[in-house]
Picture (cartoon, protein in one colour):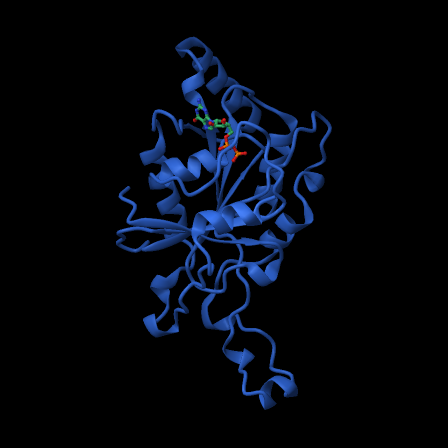
Length: 256
Ligand code: GDP
């Protein structure tokens, strides 16, 4: 997939910061340090997301706007979710994700003109604002669950998949860091992953680029079947609000 451009848009701390436009959103989900930032950079062939050797501490959603050549899919938001930590065993599906992620998935994908804020309070009307015209915050259309190829069947990853499926979003499960496994280890890991999750797993590497084209194909397929800007007249599409400061400085500052 040829990527025309990518920019860090903003970090979201609450629903007020979720996108309100028809650009489809793809949530990237996984444990801390599984390689989500590296995957965003590899998929977009840019250094837009900050990677680190230490587990991330961010509790925010980081939004990236990616421009694609189409046809059909011209823009997509990649949404990097907070990593879900290192708890071993016994993790209940419901407690894998924090409240912000729960809130994000509670928002349906953008559904066009039917999704509007409630009628304006009279003060808003008097001030000349028109919240009728303001679309509601939208949630993810689909998700990529990233798991570490070297650690098949972790309870937290299984719980995360259950959680995503219960939230009724199409999910692609991706095994990261596949370059770290020798051929025999890799075959064993792929078997164990398939048995543990009972869904197809796509092996990828942000280092060698393995699997990335196939992942873009699967992402496109999922998002093209979701509601997108294609179904909306062009004048109804609000321009995404970009951060006022440069993408990299904003992203560093806002991710603590
Ligand atoms: P995040 O916390 O999920 O965003 O993880 P990062 O993208 O920051 O990656 C965590 C560490 O794993 C970093 O040291 C990366 O360089 C490394 N890493 C990520 N993806 C790969 C990969 O595909 N192959 C290898 N060998 N290392 C990777």
